[in-house]
Structure formats: structure tokens, C-alpha cells
Amino acid sequence: MPKIGNPKSSVDIPCERCGSKRKVSKKWTEKIENSGGFMVLEHTQIICTNKECQAEFDKLVLADEAKREKLKQTKLDNAAKRASETPQIV
Ligand SMILES: [Zn+2]
Image (cartoon, rainbow, N blue to C red; front, side, top):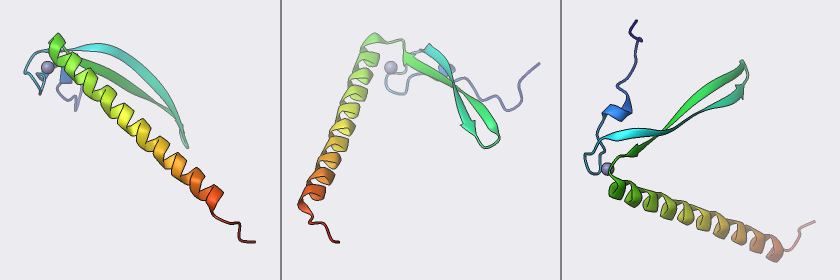
């Protein structure tokens, strides 16, 4: 029985960076509670079968995460600074 509204599996879509075939490297589910009970989210991690391309991508992701982490830290630092510098108004 064909699934209704089943989108083309993203594994079938070639890598947008190098055009190589892609494959599923990880699959996991996440349970999220909401007002109506809970829902289960399915996650799929798809990687490129081209090792060099994937390595390059991993590097980009890591760099991106590092950047975000730094930004977050800067914000925290600034907030802490402001908090210690601002005189308490009573
Ligand atoms: Zn690729």
C-alpha cells in the first residue's frame, strides 16, 4: 500500500554539493510532550557517500557550531558585565 503524501526520500536526492549519492547514517526518534499528550518526531541524518565532501561538510558544521557557541558566550559575558556595572535602582 503506497503511503499518502509520502515525499521522495531525501536519500534519493543527490548531494547538492557534489552530486554523489547519499545515505542514511543515523535514525532516531524523539518524544515531545505537548498539550494533547505527546508526539514522536522521527529524525534521519543523511550523509554524502563522497567521503571528502562529507568531511568538508562536517568541518563546516563544526565551524558553525563553534561560531554560535562563541556568540552565545559573548552575549552571556556582556549580560554579566552589564549586570555588574549597572547600579541597582531601588
Ligand atoms: Zn557530497
